[in-house]
Image: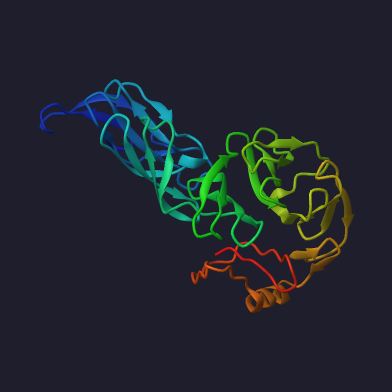
Length: 309
């Protein structure tokens, strides 16, 4: 296939002769290769390039004369190489913007996909209940994934996806069952807060009256089932006393990174980072030595802090 002009050719004699059977649009998302498992069934992965557009794979079941798009969502945004061993079983190498490559596997012909390498881990935000149990947002293959760990973050399990209707940016849990996420609606771009009371299996949207802010929210945390705080763009501090159903705003020029409690917070990121490096927190039996980029800091006690990475 010549991806520059989008012409798709077919050969029935090992490449001695070729017949043009279709012309495929070659603008972004760009076709990157062709994989056929039978003379009739084949796939073409799509690379979105700089985005922001949808990718996925093109699937044909009539020898390339007609194609449909499968896997077109955030989970399958940009794909380079695809390999199938049957009409149902296949793999694809995909790329997450600014995060790297990962491998996805399908068992239903490309309709749904599961990340198999690297193992899932949070890429956006984390909220730990104690030294063992915690929740995380986002992974390489799905920026809207909700993850769960029961071993202090050594392994993570994908338990829910918001991607079909909601773009989450931060989360906060107060126990193993009750938690909140903040983000924007895909359809309206309106700020939305969702709440769960069954460990993330089901989520209920709360009616809130705040301007669009999740991509500028520097802090989001509930301290108990009723009291929560949002710090937006380091200027507006929103407080809730009814579990997130209503919020009051106070405007002041702050550079708040984290709160120790409802009444005490840090203004200086440098001081907080220094404090975190000195305190750290280790769990019995989970003495992890891996180092990585700090993506979120949340001080929960004066002598206890946690980092992602």
